[in-house]
Amino acid sequence: MERFVFDLQRNWNDRPFVWTDGACETGPQLHVPSHARVMVLAPHPDDPESVAVICRLLLDSGCDLRYAIVSMSPSGVEDRYAQTSCGSIFQSLQAGKIAIRRKEQMTAAGMLGLTEERVSFLALDDNEKAAVSDSPENRARINLLLESGDPDIVIMPVGKDTNRTHAWVHRVFRECAAPLAGRSKRPIVALYNEDPKTTSMKPDLLVLFDEKAAEWKGEMLRMHYSQQRRNMQIRGMGFDERILEINRRRFERFSGPADRSRSSPGYAEAFEIELFGFP
Image (cartoon, rainbow, N blue to C red; front, side):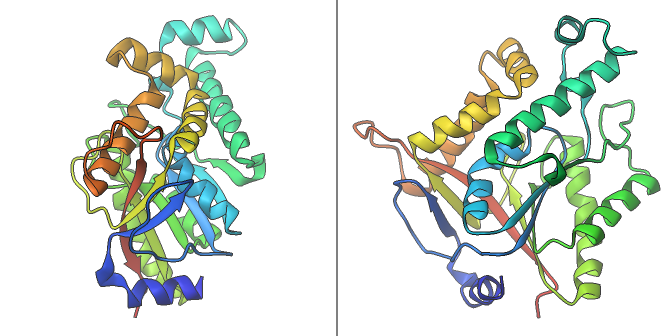
């Protein structure tokens, strides 16, 4: 991690940095950190799978990767689907929806090799708008999570996002991160990822991947079957297609229009970087 921090500061003006997964073109490089504590601070179940490629890259480099799911987002599961899937097993429809989202998240995390002790569910209370309530209790739980996890790197959606919970998690994290870095006397690197509801971002880091990796990522995204089904009905495209299309467009903005003659079109997960506690 020390090497990563040193290179990050020294090469800051060379952004965008480029990491690769699979047979893709390369650009300005920043070495992937090893032995770092990485927290994926996910506003909802399924958000970690939107950044599956960087998660695999960090795991392969020897990082300690963990997921923290902030809200269970039961409103994201259709009533009819929950009733069909759960029947009368649970006391309420809400409980059944939460169980569905938890099971989907654990199945997807298992594809990455993460066991139950590496996935935590905060299940913070939602308000009437199906977003996490901006309460002192919820803010305190995020702060406690960060203090106890003591991460070197935190990954979450960028704050300029039309999803209220995405924006709230980003805002509360930033309020907690600087004091935490000061107390621990160690820097924290925040990686804010692009999402379908992102309104603007600075692509400071691009993680490039090929068609084979895209197929693997798509399979993980489809493990969130309730979201796959809802996206098909609402948007006419699967959850997997929606995320991978964002990745494909980002790659094309980086490298120019794709050459249709290539058998393996490119994809890129994009991240905005913010540094806390750096001298």
